[in-house]
Length: 146
Image (cartoon, rainbow, N blue to C red; front, side, top):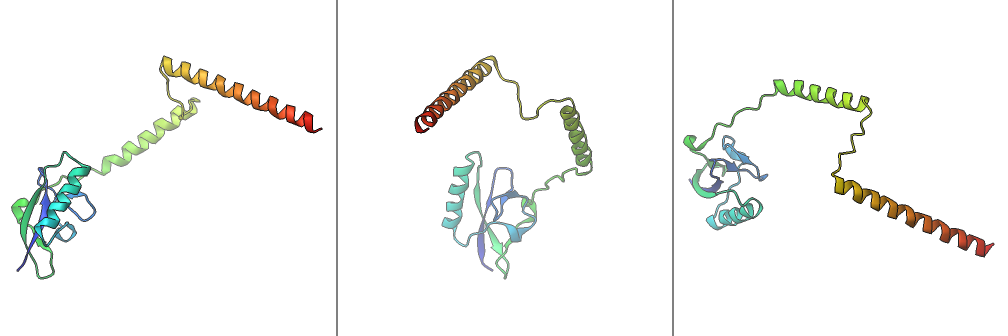
């Protein structure tokens, strides 16, 4: 049997080929490297993206097919997400959003702080004066050409 190198973080989760942290139950989807320097390069790449990870390189045995054999004591039990209550929460959220729209509230508008509101008024006034100036210029050129 040959050996492979896999990556494990401080929460005992393994990195898979898609760059996600998983429990390690499905060993065929895990990132694996034949050489330790390849695994170390991956550690640096992951650390550059997420400096909070504390990653270790683990040496494991490989099957004849080249898949890592993860010891059972390393596999983490990841809790299952409760899906039954999620549908009720989504329906309630959609109902609440519908009620807000029915009251006439524009969902794209958000309350502005006093300084932001004043700045928005100033920008709107400046835009209006520029547009007015453009109209006068256009009128001038139309009169000249006529």
